[in-house]
Structures are given as structure tokens and as C-alpha cells.
Image 1 (cartoon, rainbow, N blue to C red):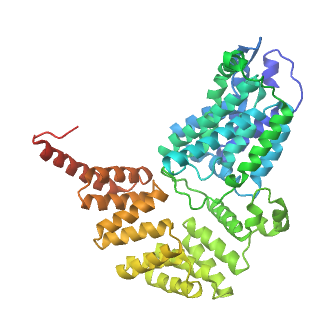
Image 2 (cartoon, rainbow, N blue to C red):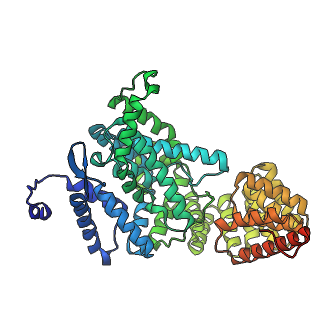
Image 3 (tube, rainbow, N blue to C red):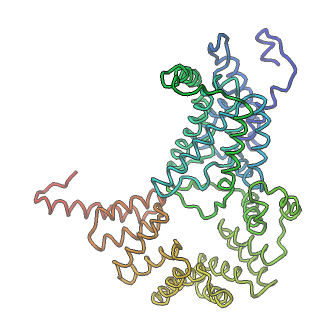
Length: 520
């Protein structure tokens, strides 16, 4: 209001401020002691809308999505000054992944705005680009950069943040190209941030101003495409809002299962940034993981019915059964909270002493705490109850290997592979154990099989590097060690080993060339 009056303009009372302010608060929220900066962020939003303009369609209009430009500028400032901790942004967006059906809620609410403002093709193009790139990375790399094609916060961004009609193309084809570019830009930015160990939370924010600058180009491309010779031989494309919306609905229903798959065991080709979460968020994440295991039907696509039936249990998760206690304990173990995990495992076993999963998970937790003898006891009890559990055999083999009982370890690892021939951890640990026994050829074989499943596994690449070095295959050893250090950049021993491999390779090249100079 003050900005309009100071510029001699008429200010109209309406709801236009609500989507701008809410979209800012969806993605970035300063901590209480710095919350005054939230108001400055909103002020910056309206100043850029007022003063950063261009001529488009015969009238003067703002260039950038109002909320996105201020979010992007502030994100760059926070990243460059290592001040991300001033905000609750990461925990805020992490909380969106906790409710069982938040994907569906965003989707259904988005249909309203897409119908009213004809933004379906922007969202459709973004989602399609991300799904295509996800599939291509799986084909060409053997793995993906993300556990799911579209992250929940990315889906929020491509549904509500980038779809401002004033800063997106006017033509329908231009909107789809705009969306495709936005989706591609998100993945590129995600890879860049993750590689530099920065929170990837900012990927969907930083790309919006870039695609806003290209809207004239996208409309121009659309006009050229329509008037091209190629289009004269193709029936005219007529965009119908209802048909486009229907295609998008079918597309979302088709990919919903992949969007909601479990992500707890994902290991990608990029290093994980070390993001400290508050104790409250750690507990919330653990409760979410436990609920997902205890009530899987509620986390299926459009599982509103099951969620409603179990609403009270999911909303305030207080474990009562052996399954619920074990699920919460396993979730805490995965998050590195071993004391809390062990407490819930013991509660599960107090309720049901013959509950095999609790014995197994307790054993894995004890291995991670270097309490190997106690771990073996629990894992053996698990196998007495369920002798066909591949993970139990892998865990027992791992524990026995730590104790130096390699023959027994190999026996259990082979039993695990008889149950599940594609078990990654069984192949990795069997290769590592055979390497410790000096059976290098067999070790290399199993480690290569493990890498076929997870090509960028740090431990598998590192152990294979050691095995190849023992066979004198220095160049291959260097390649696998470098790949390992991409995902394990803090491993100092690995860096020292890589240096020694490079020096040995240079010396080998000098001897091979017969000169006193190393090859480039």
C-alpha cells in the first residue's frame, strides 16, 4: 500500500498479497531471532516487482516471479556466506515429506490453479523433464541422482512457485518449453549444489529467475515452430485446457507410485551434505519412518482411506506393539540415534521375546556401536526364528568378519546370496572378506557384481581399488578410488591411498618409457 501511494498509484484492497507471501514462507523461513529479515524479504519482493520491468506484449510488466527473485537473491547470499543456519528452510521443507499424502494434496490443490490460470503445461513440462532425466540417468549411469523422480518440495515449486502467469510464456507451446527447461535446470542445480556439499534445498528456487528471463525466447520458439515448414505437414495442434489437464492427471497417476517409494536405503553418486537437524526434527523423521513401516497402506498413492482410519495413531505416534516399537527403533538407528533405538528394540522384545526383526535390528545397531559379541547373540536368535532371512545372514557374516572369523563369515554371506542372489550388502561384504583372506581374484569378482547394482558405492569402489592394486592394475585402481572419494570426500585415508597409487603409476610409466620423466 505504501509503495503504491509513494509512486502516485491507486492501491486496491484484495487477495493478491496472499500467494506472494505464502509462497515465500513455503520455501524459506528465518529463525525467530532473525525473523525481521522475513519482512525485508517481502519488501524486496515488491520492490523488484515495481522497478525491475520490461516491455512485453505491448505493456510494461515485471520480469521476475515476485517471490522467486527475492528468494533466489537471498539464497545466493546465504550460500555464499555459509549462513543457511539462519533459516528454518531445510527443516521446513523436510517437514513436507512427513505427512502420508502430501504429494496428493499438492496435486489436487494445483488442479484448481491450473484450471483457473491455464498453467498446466508449465507443471506438466517440468514434471515430464524430471521423469525423463531420471530414467536416462538410470539407463546410462546405472543409478539415479535422486531416490524418486521428483522430490516433494520440487513438486511444490513446479506446481505453485514457477507458475505465475505474468512471468511465464503466453503461448501454450512456450509454456511447455518453459516447464521443460525449469525441470532440467532443477536437476543441474541439484547436482552442482550436492557435488559442492551444499543443501540441495535451493535448487528449485535458483532456477526460476533464469527461466523468467527466457520467456520471450520460449514464445518466439513457439511461434517459429507453429509457422515452420514441418508443422505444415502435421495437423494443427489445438490446446484444450480440459484435455491438457486430463493428460496431466493421467501422467501424475502413472508416476505417483514412484514418487512415494521408500527412500531410506538410497545411495546416490553424489556426496551427502552434512545437515544438522534439530532433535525435534530427528524425532519427527523417525516417527515418519516408523509409521511408514507400521502402516504401509497409508503411504501408498491416494491412501487417504487408510490414513483416515489410522489418523490418531499416525498423528501422534506412540509405539505400543512389538512392530511399532521395532519400527521406531530401526528409524532412530538409521538416523544415528543408537541409545533411543536400543531402548525401543528392548521394548519390542519385552512385548514379544520371539520377534525376529527386533533381534536382528538390535544386532545391527550393536555392530554399529562395536559391541560385536552381543550383536552376534541377537542375530543368532533372529536366525533361529527366521533362518531364511538374507539380511540376518549378511549381518552375522559382517559381525564374524569383524572378529576375524573369516571362514564362518564367508559361509553366512554365501547363504545370504543363496536366498537373495542380488543382495548388494552380501556381495560387498563377501568381496571384502575374501580380500582380507587374500583371495584377490574372487574378491574382485564379487565386488564387481556389487558395483553392477550400485555403481557409485563408496566402500565397493574403495575395496575394489585395493584389490586391483594388489594385482598391479594401477590405472583401474586409481579410477575406482577416485569414484569412491566423490561420495566419500572426507575419507583422509582414501586420499592418502590415492596419492600413493598415482605415485606408483607414475613410477611404473617412467620405467616403461625408459626416460626420467613421468607421462602427463
